[in-house]
Image: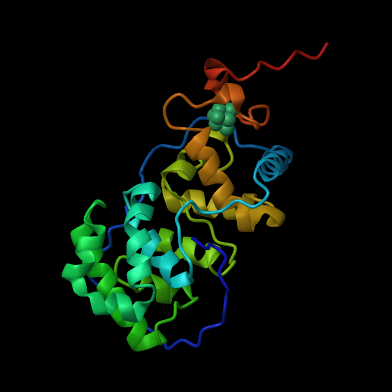
Amino acid sequence: MEKTIKTRTVTTKKVKAKTGKKSTEKKGVEKKPSNSKAMTKAQIQTFFERLREQRPNPETELNYGSPFQLLIAVLLSAQATDVSVNKATDQLFQDAPDAHSMYALGVEKLKSYIKTIGLFNSKAENVIKTCHILIEQYGGEIPQQREQLEALPGVGRKTANVVLNTAFGQPTMAVDTHIFRLGNRTGLAKGKDVLEIEQQLLKRIPSEFIIDAHHWLILHGRYCCIARKPKCGECIVSDVCNWKERFDYGAEIPELKS
Ligand code: SF4
């Protein structure tokens, strides 16, 4: 599926903040910061230079063909794998590619497309409500303001950050479980919840890397710096990582300077 999308300026109407909306997004992982030392500026620079070299054009692994489809895919991906979402949206986006056609499906029909994804009942309701708001208030387009995105049913801070960054090229940082773990573990950013990590990362990552940093970190966390048994022995940034236990997982021990 085509992932290249056009960004455009959308005229938006002001949205009243909603209260009591149901979100399927996880509320943030409350954990203690690790005891890894904070990375220095020089370490951070090298860290991202290597990740950029490894993946010059990082992309989300969710399939989508427009900002609308990205929003729906991210909304559906809460507490589900990208693979399971792609399987469901493959047919869904062919039959209902935009807000109008998806709204026309209605909740029950939409459920039949996404029933293999966790929490599909509440996600179907949120998607249809979101489509209704997009049609009524934005002519079926996706708003580009955080407050407007976060006012949509099922859309939390993380989803808004992904859409703003991936569809509209804004320097936002969506922190998921991989980035939370990786930040604390390596000393790149330390914090007890996702918001703290997000703010640390935005402050500490040099501007030349910020647009792609979200994808680099997610992919590194998903495939190398995994939760159990991280692959430190084959990690391209092990020499600038501050996790003390990396040597137990195969990272090369630096030679002592004589
Ligand atoms: S060395 Fe290990 S802990 Fe450090 S970034 Fe690489 S995989 Fe993660």
